[in-house]
Length: 188
Image (cartoon, rainbow, N blue to C red; front, side, top):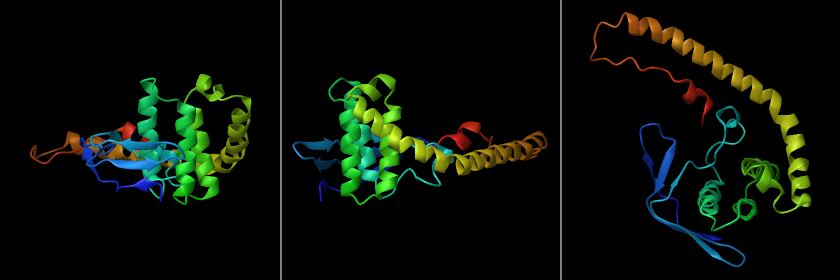
């Protein structure tokens, strides 16, 4: 197994969106070994909330997602290239047994996330691969994703409709009425 060490994390902050590695772990690539250091923070897989029904933020790919976050961190510091990090992400997911279609959809998503300039950096062939994965994925995912997004919006409206009267007629100030947040509905 190319990953050495377990993922041991602790939450950072009250929202549960960021996690800190309690201990480092290594990934043995084809030529290099990468160490994701203790103290590194991650959000696991950066998946929009309305798509987590298909690709949850963590799963079989968790170590690969954390490694990818770390390699992108290095890329932002000009110590690594994003397209190389994305390729390692894809290979690491394959080695972790992530199913073919899910793995390639996740790879295409991170390639788009790298930005247009970076998307073309490795050349036109990789861009064509990204398109070949993206077009069928978008066709398959769009209808269920729109349904989920609309349901999240309805839930948000219902939460506000419940919150406002509870807040207005709150009798006991020691019992908090938690304010709903639209960002919690749409972000992962």
